[in-house]
Amino acid sequence: MKPLALSLGDPAGIGPELICAAWAARDVHGLFPFFATGGRKLLEKAAEARQIDVPIQAIATPAEAMECFHHALPVLAGPDGDYRPGSPDPESAKIALLSLEQATALAVAGDASAIVTGPIAKSLLAEVGFAFPGQTEFVANACGIAAQDAVMLLAGPQLRTVPLTVHCALSEVPGLITQELICRRTRIVHAAMRQDFGLSTPRIAMAALNPHAGENGRMGLEEQHIISPAIATLRAEGIDVTGPHPADSLFAPHARDSYDVAIAMYHDQALVPVKALDFDAGVNMTLGLPIIRTSPDHGTAFGIAGRGQAHAGATIAAIKLAGEAAARRAQAATT
Image (cartoon, rainbow, N blue to C red):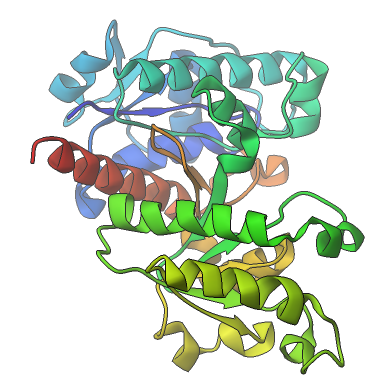
């Protein structure tokens, strides 16, 4: 199995210091070997600012990471610059983009078994020519996958959710929800739960759009006309999906035991419960790709970068999940 590739994220944010913190905690959490794409000087300064001992080992190829990971953080030759935490600018955005491009290319080429992307500032990336809404769409494009088939999964120790619609105005959501969209994305989720999470018969819960699941049409007709027919189609295909469930009770402790992943109708319906339950261990994973991509489910946190305050839990969880999924795919390829 090949090592994991970690992109730096915006080096003015918390990405570099969390990469260092994750390496320092590699044995405690049983992390599979990884390397950073670029940023040798940045990472050295980030470790120093966080006051942790992280030897840096320059490597010429990803394969070398497997040899030195136990005693040093492997860093592949790539973009680098001065460490200026909390001071993002076009130069830091360029470094973030080059690191992301390098990590993605290595995974697509099969030289890395997965990529873990560091947090970026989308507005700054746009200023340096980044033509995608986010890293998810960039990675999907690099894999030759249509953006609508790259599905966002939010995963934490207590809950996994998928937003059916993502970055759009709430007023647009009802018009975007269709039976075809529900079926298409649920099939992708079902396949990923089997392939990357090792669930032979994944249990999927579908949230309603309206309060009280529409209450027989009194509070909306989407449940009757769109969501329920889509669920019936999926169940006829042998997919274990239930709903539509009222969202106000779907994420209660007793309810979470009844499913493996919940599909929500819109962004905040999926992200609020994950962040409330698992903020410091939440992972954003892109489903439907030929490669594995995860990311910590938080932003650049420019305001606390370089101060040693950022929690490394989500980065560690993203690395761990990527390694576990890669191991399952590698095992499946040999059987």
